[in-house]
Length: 122
Image (cartoon, rainbow, N blue to C red; front, side, top):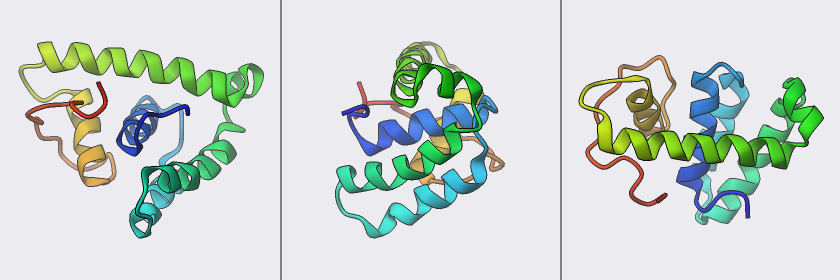
């Protein structure tokens, strides 16, 4: 499985949106639609369908293949958040992403410092 949890998938997607590699509209709708699902597996499947459609607009993803592209991005993003957990002392762009994951909110909302960033992901 590409993602170890739905929270991890959200972290990657919101990070890619924040980096302007993905457009938020359809992905945020898909993420919010998962509230009717119980298992992470079902949620991941639902969002992956939308993510695949969105990745067609990313030339690098089309060239590399969607799984390889997301896998590489996932690895870098998780490393950045591990560093962030240890070193962030104030509100930053990664804090904004964590807030979005926690509340499944849009990136336009103000960020709050989260106490323990990726405890369930690590």
